[in-house]
Every structure is written in structure tokens, then in C-alpha cells.
Image 1: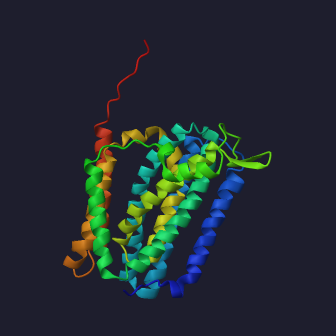
Image 2 (image 1 turned 90 degrees about the horizontal axis):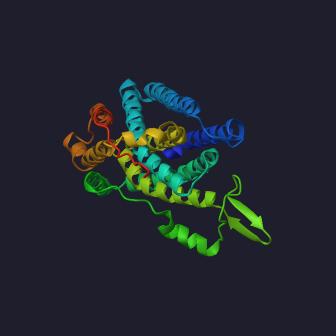
Image 3 (image 1 turned 135 degrees about the horizontal axis):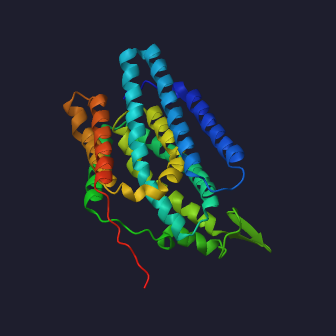
Length: 326
């Protein structure tokens, strides 16, 4: 499989991009969120716009560079692949927001500490995604792997359509249960600390347990999202950058949408259709179209399905039963 951006030639780009990400994260926590505070809707909206604009600026630079080096047709193709991957990952991230809402409610995480948990959760997610993408890039060298990934995405999409919503029980997570056997956990929060020392012993706080659970759930989400983007592009660099940009904006999107996330109740069906589509793309459509299903068609279909599912959610809202006190 011939790549436009092989790692052996573009290692410097990966290094530079990673430095940029670390710099932005350092500015985020060290400057803009040095003091723990509750993130307002306005602040979250501004940061959401900033992250989206940065992603689109990067895509524009990618387009001009690719066009200059490989020709206009290739530049356009690569740019559209990045955009499609970014939209898919951004949409799949909505599932993460559902989990954030439940976990923060379960552990009763104060609003002013939620950004700190998400910040370190995002750092962990970046590491796990990099590992998954590297493994996926290696596996995608073997043509038969595409069929396995495709079949997995189709099954996942079908299960998403028909399976009921699962309740989240952090206390039953095997990783958390194992962790608690070796590290004692305080009964209450200790400010924004993840660990505290009491006497000669180190204690974890509920804040760290919430972080640990979020990391575990992101590993599960990565299993779906990484193959989905590999269905849209064979370039690991595009998979990596589109994935990272979508994750970087996840915290801001949570604080912006957390209060209204239940309104998008039909979005999961749109995501299911997208997963089935990209699965079919890997095992059938690419071969049916001479090795590459047109990215413009893929992008148009994905965007249309997601927008339609959001529109239907807004037109047909869920009616919540009012609970009255007797």
C-alpha cells in the first residue's frame, strides 16, 4: 500500500504536530484554566469554535501542501478525507459526552473540577489513540484486515440500532475494582487532587477514579472510531490528525452540550447508519469502485445522515415525565 505521507519521510511532521498539541494543552491548563472554575456555556462555545477553526486551518494548509507536492486532484482528495474523518470522529465523540454526563453525576464531581478530569482524560485518550492508529496502520498493510474491520463496524452499527441503552456502573468495572485492591481511596474529594498522602500511605481520590473510568471507556470508543476513519482514508497521518483534532475539542463540546445532550436522542441511529456504511465501504464499495469509493460521495452521505438524525431529534423531542413531590 503506497502512501503519500509515509512515517519514514514525515516523522518530523508527527513530531511537530505532537509538539503543537502539547503546547495547546499547556496553554489550556497552565494559562486559561490555572484556577479551577466552572466552565460557562459562553467559554465552552468560544473554545469549541477555536478548536474547529484550528482543524479547518490545518486542513487548508494540508490542501495547499498536498496540491503543491502531488497535484490539485490529490490535494483535494486528501483534504476531503481529513474533513470526512474529522466529522465522523466528532460525531462519534457524542457518545463520550453521554458517558461524561453519567460519570460526573455518579461520582458527584463538582463542576469546577470537571475540566481538570477531562483535561487529563484527553491526554490519556491521545496516547491510546496514537497506539491504536499505529497498530491499525500496520494491520492495514494486509488487505484481509479491511474485511475484518468492515465486518466489525457493520456488526457494531447493527447492535447500536437494536440494543437498548446500557446503564453505566463504574463500581463494576474490573480495572477500577483491581485498582482499589492495591490503592486505598478516600471517601471524599480533596480539592482538585487525584492523590493525597495521609501518614505514610498514598490515597487516590474519587476524582482519580472518575478519570480512570473515563480512560477505560475511551479505549472502548477507540475500537470503533479508529477503524471507521481507516475506512475513509489509508493515510495514517490523516487518521492521526483528524482524530486528535476531534478529541482536542471534546472537552469544550461537553461543556457546551452537556445540558442538552438528551435532545439528540435519534443521533445514535445516524451514527449506526454511518458505521454500517463505512463498514460496507471497507468490504465491498471500495472494491466495487475500482479500489476507492469516491470520497465526495462518502462525505456527502455521512454529513446528510448525521444532519438528518439531528434534525429529526429536534423535530420530534422526547417527552420526559414530570416527577411531582407528594
